[in-house]
Image 1 (cartoon, rainbow, N blue to C red):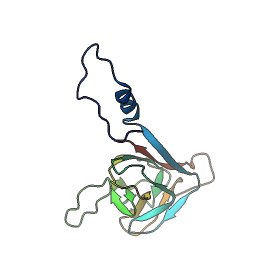
Image 2: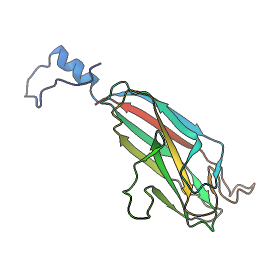
Image 3: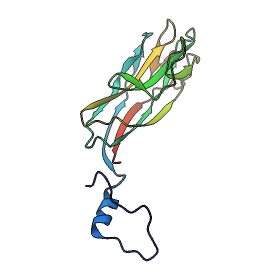
Image 4: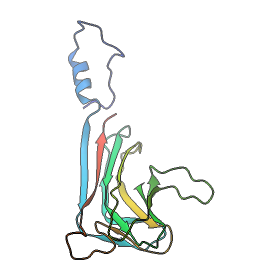
Length: 179
């Protein structure tokens, strides 16, 4: 499979592709591998610093240093009503990616507002990363509380044993895309 294509910038009407051009076209912009994990149990944290959500971590070893990694995460969460909010972010090898710029005392993250103990939020995060590496890379979903309190993944804070308090699933998927 070709890592770099040698296709012309434009084609003309009636032009016939050579076998090399057809093979390059076939190898361009393909999904080379997919790694995914799903968390069906619950996760709880009282941390005020970003911590990996157990069960929402995957590793991938890119085939080429020019490859892009498409990261898709979907999760359901809740938090203590007294907590102003909890924050989430995607991380590559423990470092936040797909976050806003740091500014003064503001924390770069994806932000979730406080919700009631019987409700959940369902953020979906999608980010095209350019790690420029052929070494193993670990992607994770991280979370933290803005202040004292607890956040919950795949359940409501109240978590009563009734139909009105659901349990859910969360996942993270990474795809290597040839460039």
